[in-house]
Image (cartoon, rainbow, N blue to C red):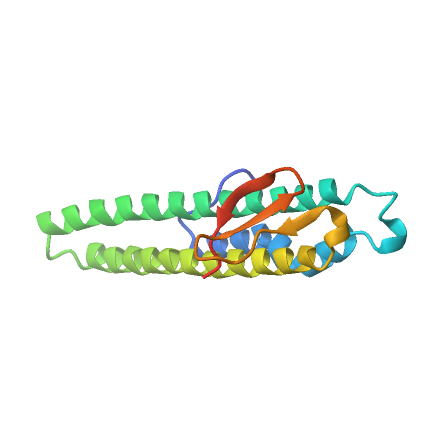
Length: 168
C-alpha cells in the first residue's frame, strides 16, 4: 500500500502523521475486514476461505512493509538534514535562526522515530487479532502454528504464508 499521492511528506510532520493515519486504515478496521473476509458456515462452500484469508493477510503485510519503509525513509531524510544543520552550526555558532531550525528538526526526528514504536504496536495488534480470529475458524483450512519464542506464522494445510513474525 503506497502513501496517497505516491510519497510521504517528510518535511511537514503533521502531514506525515495524517498520511500514516490514512495508511493505517487496514489495521484500524481489521475486525471489520475479518468479519467480511472469513465466511460463515453457510457460505463456506461458496467462498475459498483460504484464498480470502491469504489475500487479507498479504494486504496487511504489504501495508505494514510500506509504512515501515516510508517511516524509515523519512527518518533517514530528517537525519541527513539534522547532520547538515549540525555542520552548519559548527561553522556559525552564533546564528540563532540556524540553532532554532536545528532544534526543530531534531524534535521532528524524535517524533518520527517514535512513529516506529507506534507502527510496531499497530502491527502486533493487527497480527494478533487476525491470527486469533483465523484460529477460531479451523474449517477455513488456515491454522496458526502457535506462539513460540521463535514467532508466529499463518499457514494453510500445505504451506506457510509470508514470514514468521514475533508477537512480543
